Image 1 (cartoon, rainbow, N blue to C red):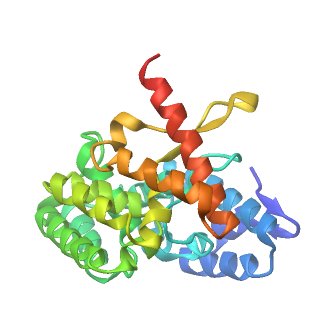
Image 2: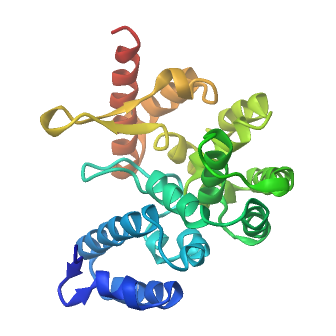
Length: 274
């Protein structure tokens, strides 16, 4: 299948160029497009890479760092990846691609590659999601003897981020929270999110990251998976903050964010009793 946006032949680009050169061309093309064009091209790139990496491709591992910090993420602000009406959220798709990029490597080589990224990447949120995917699925390849080192490096990085508002500037902070929670820090994560409600950036993120888009067509809606997220979020406290924001926040965008969260939270609570 040829993916094309205007005269930009994506299939030919991925087939004929090395990954770094292909991603540079994609970045240059993205810079010429408006918001809608960027969204369309990003979707085409994701679909093309899902096909290529899912069936094995030459130089697959060369896509690893490019996916973790490349131009497909340039338009993703911190504070989470809000669900949209036009398809699956970006983070889980990129996570699967990151895992697929390394699938053909030997375990120790794969682990060394991930360990280096854990130490050096400015944004580790997508990497945290990928490491959890490696850990949790027994059918996936493993990370060899480097896994304890990788866990420690990521947890140290998360702890340092949590001491500043930089935590919420990471592109997918929900992945940081779940990695932290899943590696023996349950109570610390719960206290962290409770305290984060006092920070405007933290509150804005917590009103966004638990939302999931479910249903199809006219039945599509936002919902909060209350049972799952209650392990790390004090929903009673967050609901009170959201009500206050919805009623009296100076900015319309904040009021809309709060109302969207409250509607999704109500839908999530209703699901518990069905």
